[in-house]
Length: 221
Length: 316
Image 1: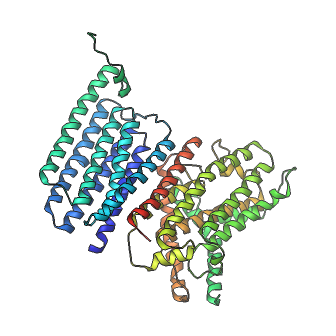
Image 2 (image 1 turned 120 degrees about the horizontal axis):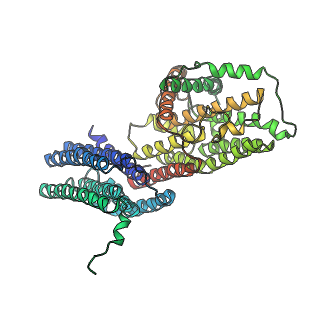
Image 3 (image 1 turned 90 degrees about the vertical axis):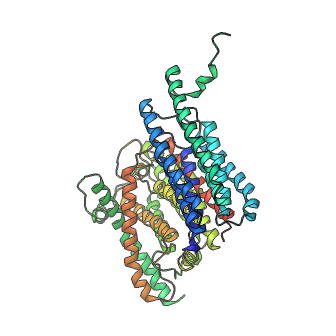
């Protein structure tokens, strides 16, 4: 069992990377949220597994927190938001997916080459997957940059947070509990505020395209 | 070259010839079940082949010898491909002659000739099909190569038999790169075998068809050979996928007993694989032709990331 653990962690890391790529090329908002949910589930599995093997109850708490927030609550809330905003079947026109993918692969190479010296120093079980976690973070960054609608940007932000937590879990076997709670609270509050923002943007412009925000002007000037 | 080796090679060939139409029939059967239609029966492809072989062949007036010759060439390419993929045993006398790269080359050769034959008669549909086939092919081939390289990197050899031997008999290990390669391989084989997201295998005379458009002008025994070659291609791809990702149960050299056991195992694996293929086809919608490069580009990138993950995690 113990022999397979690093391999399973690496496998979960690869699944998370795969889902990041799937999210980049996904046009439908509903599918995007579901992909994000699966990514969260893979993260939870990795946390629990690492916690079990390294005997750290902290990781169980962190995993449970992720499960509650990122697999259950936030997807439910996002589903509710897109239903209320009536953008459930929105299809976003993305500019040139193959180009985005090529940039994505360049990011993966960059992340892997950056992480290789660091993970050689790491003595944890899953130090090798730091590169994959870093790649996920960069890919989510790119997703936030390339998307023009508000909901996919929020999903990109949350997915980046998934990558960060995974990087922390993989390299250091989990952050201190207080940091975990702080991050979780941040994400929760962030999503709630962004949810309110989405309603406001919608109210003002009738759609969720954030390019509209560029034309905002103060009335008094 | 031992007698048993020759025997297992012959057995693999006969198996491929006989099982290929059955696999096609089984996939169709499953798909009909899933779509709540009454199925034509698993043996329908055999009946089709029998009917076609007994008919008189009609040729277009301006057909060149190439048009006449192409079905035989395509058929033998696919048969050879089935012969070098370790389906039942890794003790194949033909396999040192051709490795994974040659396998991709064989598929490419068949593709070139089927496209040339389609353009030969000069009908609009044939030319259209040939162009689309090339559009699919030029992206599917590198992706397939990358998938095979992914497996080669783990096992240190491009020979298919060596890959299967190493994967099946070393200690059980989970390779994350094979997950990416598996996804890429599934996408490539859907595209290469004219399956639903890319092409619809059971439409005739539809503007979006690819494979059917190319063989539209063929009749009787030539059409039968083309259909049989398509079945063999599906069989070859399924067996290659099983050999790379589920290599357990393939017999080694000098073990006649394992060879006996390998056949039911193969049939079992193919039955499950066919059902999964039917489920994938039912669940997905046909995409626009211009989305296909995007689809296959994704497959290519998946396979490349698989290679990169191999490098990162230091496998091999």
